[in-house]
Length: 340
Image (cartoon, rainbow, N blue to C red; front, side, top):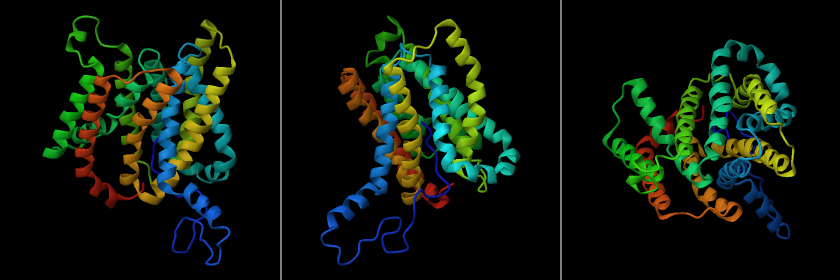
């Protein structure tokens, strides 16, 4: 999963009253239902919701494959397949921006290392030890971690509402990690999977902050493709090492799961997210990420049989309440900034 603001829309734009959507001819009575379906499929809110659904599904698939394939190998093959799909669409644009990519090579390497080579293996390692639901709920802390990192880096003191949001979300994280029982810390200890997921959240925050430095002449599609290109060599040695210890068995679940993550969790999810962010803006679109724990809990219950505990409900409510406080304060500034 790579969540980022795009540089442009996907698909053709209309110059009519419904910008970015197909115009319905005035006399199109018999075809009204077909036009309505097309408009629905191109609705930015639906695109963003589907992106959140596909990304949540990637967590569930990663949990299902925890004993079938090494995290580094799963990440490598996921992005190798995604790159093969992306190239026909962005190849010409990528070639035209090679001078910009070479100029910004340090940023590209940093994006590839954090957003792909580190983040995804950490998530898959976490999913070996914790539930997909808990991993997604922990990932919901990302906006809080990003705010804290921005405040530390800029020296800006968070506003009162932002600080309250941070404290509430941290309380929610504590409930999630301890499963609502503080005696866990002294008895069985903290679930190592939750700690791995917290590490993944920190890496994701670093990736998100690096994206703020992407220059305007480096389109998001080119930045993502370049990141994949530099991340694959980073992942290859770990994939080969894992294969030398335990040979990779390309069973049907592994093949289908990897294809789902590559096609839906990476390519289609990115395209839907890009379309939605371009239409609604990053601030409004960012709210749809909060659907991931909801979708993930439902998918985990359906496909993995993971029950939703009362502690998870309370922890999630606290985390999301804290994020609402933070983003209600931060949204106007993001809206003025526009799409990066």
